[in-house]
Image (tube, rainbow, N blue to C red; front, side, top):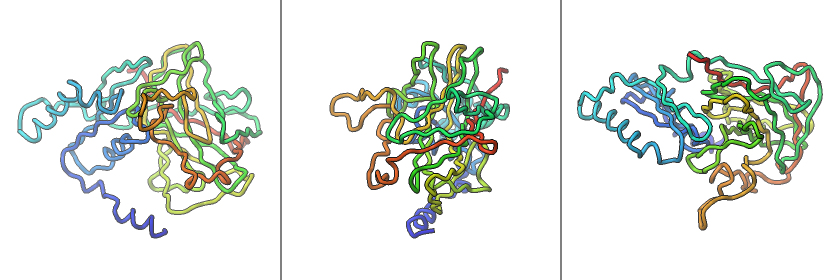
Length: 334
């Protein structure tokens, strides 16, 4: 471990030492910002009295609305003032389940991820760029330019409503023309007319269902911490690629929620650069950053991503022992 990594490792908090009552308020659309700490902090905290709440919309809307104010007063009144606010009956997990067109339905749960989750694999097919529950028998490759829109794999239109709520992950096999590759994943939703449905996010008014990222040279996993739905990368070693040689990548997509109506399609985009809705910047004049789908969280620093390494062609591999898939947290109806 180099000095820089050792510096930060020594300053990383031990969340198990947190014993105070805890309320973590997260935003489904906060990819790249607070959502990471909300979920990981909630899970890792040692507090016996801890609660998780998840909402949508902008960075400030719900938490500072009457809904958010009432939630905070109920929590602080109970623990700081000793008031009988009814917090002792509050569900340990409160989820605003997301539907298209900014519709949310509040639902109480007992744990995170949900115990009744049906972890379901949707396999990527090179032929037709499909996502299906059945693996492909085809052995082939698909290449894409990292400067372009990448590859987008779609399910068939849903025949019935399906809820996706929880952490998401993908497993792919990828090679590069160079010694490294940045992989950007976007979980997306399309209506029956083929139009992408986006959502108001914490820092951008048009975000997809979910986002994930991984630098291939940082693919080393922590075997003790990793779960099928939550690959945990150590970031303590660099494993350069051999040009043209495929490597196995486990990539997380941050926790999300969406109820997919009949006729709609889920899609997974694999790219070599940041997700963009349609290329248009809809930021207001003099905005401090563009608004194309990821807000300020852009990966465009040439010192971090030198073109000689990352402006190249990446290739997805499909074979008998290389069946790439998307792992979805399907929630059955009660």
